[in-house]
Length: 396
Image (cartoon, rainbow, N blue to C red; front, side):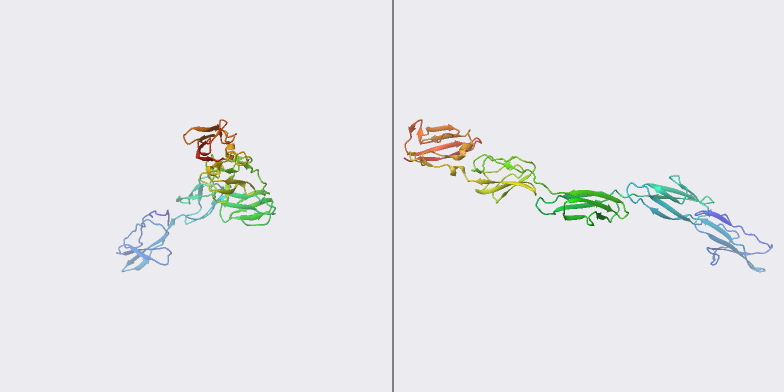
């Protein structure tokens, strides 16, 4: 009998005879189980090929004088090391609980086991996430090498959105949303208030704690407090509350907390939502409410009126007759612009009235002398460089 490693070649099989002076015929046979035999060669001796499994051999000898005789059986045992295995990967990120267990068969016991981490048993434990190599050798020196990899899940990661309860008088209105990634799905959540959903709506004020577990019972915890939102200071102001379209664009002054947004009602007012600057030339004539909103609980509002073209607000006639009615040329919006210049010119281009700022209204005189009735022309230049032109009639 012989023993060899898989893929090895057995030694030649040499037959002997107990009789002499005969002319025998030979027939070599092989079998895997000693029950079913297959004829393979008719030579006196036989050199088997390389083998990968155990094989039995015998020789049949036939002569005319003696009939047929069968030799003893030669068993060639082939070592073909095989393994079954159980691999337990790391269950939770950061742990050291990986395992590899081998079930070795096919070779000739006993086995020598050598792992790359220095252990020498079929089962190795407390493993980190990495590759492990093992060499298995049986008693006749046949050896096989195997490689295994222990993996580790990603850490559990929790993202959350917490919305505080409304600033109204309602007893609820908060919201808590959780989003889990990493670990091993599916995930389960348990709240201290008994809920099992990843999103809680209309949450009352109070303290909330959640325990989240994945399929491997890896755990992450979350705590938050839902409280009543308090209004923030959202006060703001404009220099004036009514404007004509040729005036410089007014900007809001934030008196309270910055960072909010502006909006207006109804439509037609054109403005910058961040600064509150009103585009007078692009806005429609009308009355509006401008709102500065910091959050759902904090907003303030002011009335704003766009009065149309500035020229439409300038009287085109005065009657300086001393009756107390329409005796002077009143231009109310010019009070806002002390640097504005005003000129009144007669039909020949002569300046009849000129002032910087309009603190003293024109009363139909030029340097103390009454001007004759008739048509005159005016030029008003605002600090922005905007010029308003028109005609003015003096009626006596």
